[in-house]
Length: 216
Ligand SMILES: N[C@@H](CCC(=O)N[C@@H](CS)C(=O)NCC(=O)O)C(=O)O
Image (cartoon, rainbow, N blue to C red; front, side, top):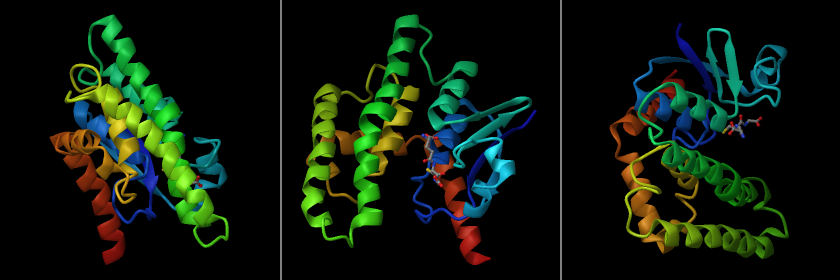
């Protein structure tokens, strides 16, 4: 049975790999699982066919036979649990890798999303100039804490895991914020993730969607 995921037909990031299908693509590449991608327009996201898969009308989704999933964290965890390569065998180390997935999604991602969404939708508003330093500071606090924990390690807890995969994809959203430059070990951590062959394949595939759409 072929795995099928959904991604934007026309990604607002113009192929920078910031949409959340990227983490699912990367996970599938890490474990060597082939997959197909169904591209969805913004209009189709909110139509019944897609809503039956994803109640919030978003990407990514994941279908494998009778199983249909939404939420990138649940999808990556499912992939990591069913294939070797993204979670350690040792039960405690496995629990910690999953902990880092949750940390990425529920502690680090929210201030980063708020920061980037404010830039996208509020930067022409009168309050933005006053609000932006607060948003910067919230992100900086998390980066500072993460930077201290990471120290000079390659990955968050021993070998590369789904926790790192999730954290790197979350942090990449800051690539044009100027904030990562303040934390060289985090910038190097992201670069290590991006240097992985599986990441590069996933990135090239999502970029091809944008390039093909632009050429067409
Ligand atoms: N918590 C969800 C968030 C999904 C999400 O925000 N997807 C975005 C793309 S990265 C989307 O589909 N946005 C279009 C919309 O919400 O209408 C996840 O991690 O899968």
